[in-house]
Length: 285
Image 1 (cartoon, rainbow, N blue to C red):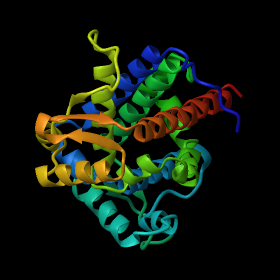
Image 2 (cartoon, helix red, strand yellow):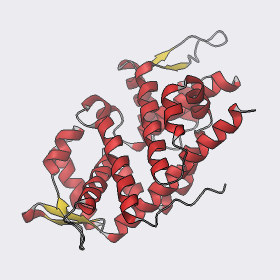
Image 3 (cartoon, rainbow, N blue to C red):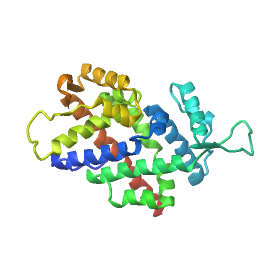
Image 4 (cartoon, rainbow, N blue to C red):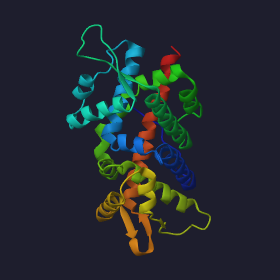
């Protein structure tokens, strides 16, 4: 599928879009210990996403609603972890098990308002950032937030985003590595946020771009242990994604990390923008 090329000629514009993306996503998780615990890894977020997608497809296209069995059937690995995660979502009130008129053993999983509202905010932030990169219309994020019909239709058509993420994951090794660690994606966003802020600072126009490396702030804000954050930062340094000056409390992104996340961000936001175009086209028929 052909996607438009983002307008990245202006590096200031790109870093402003990165800062908007990182701040808006981290805001959803900062000091939210329950959310960070429940959605600690990408695998968990994707499983929750597939539940809501199947739910919306059931409403939109009359397909079977999601069940624990159907979600596990689409899980390539870690099925026991995903099953435990779905049970946890029920315990914390983000999912409810309904009843089936055909098979009492196949109870549909019904997303509850907190899960739906969180997804709506998360998707809207992605479309705002896609617009900042010249990929999406300005009205797409507003439609997700304010139009229940558009939100349902969008989510029902968004399954291909998860498919693309899985298919192209190997193209973005730094992103893939951070995603595999507990809270890793959010740690990576914090690093990108710190880099973008330093790059956009009035006093900065020299290389390398240095920023304060605050492991304690990351741990406190994301509800992670300090030892775990130190471990992720240390391993990221060993892998060549981060250059850390621990005695001075400073760090900088390696070119490898920055190029990987730049490619990942622009590519993935393109998928979100394309889903919005697909949704508008379907609703106009």
